[in-house]
Length: 346
Ligand SMILES: [Fe+2]
Image (cartoon, rainbow, N blue to C red; front, side, top):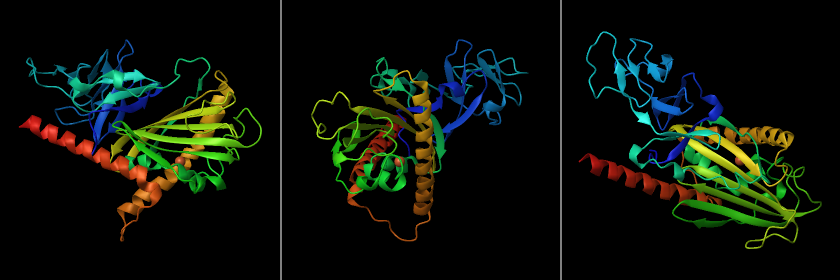
């Protein structure tokens, strides 16, 4: 089950142009393209005649022509041509999804179209601040249900075992995590004091010696995460203290789009409060992060397969508190949405 009334990242901006781009979100096949003006379009990827994917057809100006019998659909989804038929039934068409380009991604609204408000797309802090830099980020398909990824992104401790040579090290395993909840998100965070700078960050921090480190893991409903990392000189960190002038901060934006129950498209990029226009730093961070996320991909695909094939019950640990709170609240939101949909259909 998925939460439908939300914006999901459907593609990276550069993936979609004047060629037809087929994808799947929330178990639905969707075709993406851009109009001649560059506006993104998202339509149900199935001709109503014999359900050939429209992505196997071709663009005719801003409309899409089915590759089987030439039925043609306006970017609104309405059918505007049926070869051989003088009359087109007014209800003939395919579903269209609200689509918006933002943060270098194309966002799709998979629920009730009249509720789609682009101002509710997750904001990126400091996006316009010239002192902040941003990498290009990336995308990968992970062979696991998206809730295994929300688990992962609410679990600061996994870096000790999954990423021991980059985000984590021997110190990052056992420290307790504070969990807070709101109507929008669950946050699992911890300050660690007087620690070594973990290997991934060591070349990025602008001070010498040991550090205080913040891990802020926040997942917003239904499946968008902000992972904030701060390193500041040892003795200067802690909650509610102003950020030290030499503090390094990296914000990792992670957008999870369910393809189906067992596959997820994972989009990400990082912003940083240093080296704002340094393309070499961006490229180096992008490459390192991709390799680190490959470590998650391998583990989470095996976790999903393991849970699907389980012969015995799994157990939960103290570190699962934030992931389980998130899952429970999201399940309530999905159930409430189902009830509303059923009531609306009555
Ligand atoms: Fe990870």
